[in-house]
Image 1 (cartoon, rainbow, N blue to C red):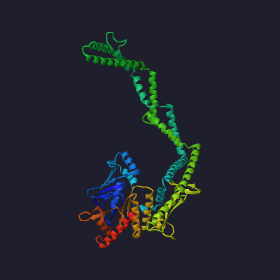
Image 2 (tube, helix red, strand yellow; image 1 turned 90 degrees about the horizontal axis):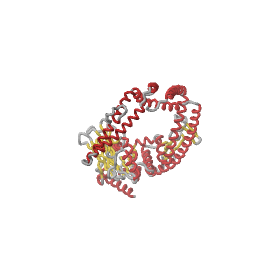
Image 3 (spheres, helix red, strand yellow; image 1 turned 90 degrees about the vertical axis):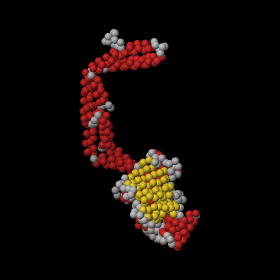
Image 4 (tube, rainbow, N blue to C red; image 1 turned 120 degrees about the horizontal axis):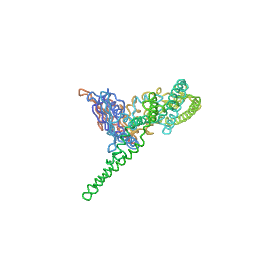
Length: 585
């Protein structure tokens, strides 16, 4: 859960800390006091888009900090991801995260004690937090979002089916597009292929080898300077090991080292230090002997053949002809040839290849149609369960006669998407299958079944959204749920039922609710009030926890706008007592 949230320099909030609990946290306050800034701060903390216009001019930056304490699989997943990114949880297992936004729009993020990309905060946020507001209600009215919601509810096996469909669909479209391109641009492809073949033929005739240009350059230098190299090597060999051309009375290095070693060894009895030096002279003699042997081998292999030098010149000229056309060096020429061979296979427009691609496209189309049919059947089954559970929740939200239906219909063919026969019907098929999903509401018996965007009032839409979230929460999801005034347009008994449902959610999740309804606020485990201070030159807001009498006064203000009214406070205390009994029950 989110244990603590600190907001500095954001909107009307100068500096405030929200101590949060694991149950139901309610945030209330007068209009304009800054309740929305709390939700905005949460959005920033978990990777949301930064709006520099909300940053206070003084101190010139907004900072949002939070402390997460997680458990179970979510903790394992989040801690492992943070560790992989170079951060680490605190010793007590909690995780610190922060987001800073300046008035210039620059943004920085920290997670687990390390600077991180903002995308890391968003990645963690997907695991631990779900925010639901009036904009989410509007989003759910879009058909694509309704299909996504049903797919989310359908479960892991359905998701595997969808992943398989998306993979096969991508392969099918790739083959179809490739086939169409080969047929449409056959002439241009053939012209490009001819040019590539000419280049490959030229390179194949020369047959360059990796690193050959450098090797030939070194060999040419040796051949061009063979006599000078021979003279130097012979003189060096004579100096270290003697030779037939050396004067008889001129000692070589090997002889001198041997004499020096034997002289020192004769005195080791007098001073052992000379023995150590003698051993080192023996090592030097061995090294000199090795050099002498290598010089002999070098002289034996030194070639001054003019014919070989001419052959090297001709080979280097042939390689230079290739490097002038295709790359800077021989390795680059070889790489060009590899790319050309790959490209030639891409340019192939032979009848044999086109027929093969046509057969592959037909095979993959059959797989797509089969998977789309299985996905559709899975959606139909999930739709029945989803509709029944949401309808059941609506009964507890003062809509006892309302019913939600989920229509899973074949998508009309002939749009921008390709069409395939799925379950015997020609439908438009995309990567998510060939279904249109529509949430419909029957508000009361005898009412027509209308799409959600046409059949629900503002208050009904809020309750449908809450019912959907309760159903989703029962099947898992993030441990912290945020509801930003989803109770707009609701009052009376329905408001009490919304409070009861949110309290029920809070038994298994941490719930944060921004509300203007006292019936909802009465169910809170912790009540936070955002209060505005207009006493100074600049309006600021802060957040405080209210309990007992203060809480009753806040509810009285929400009920009648009269926090000091004895009647209002009595009503508030009665509301709190009812909510307490409900929570205990």
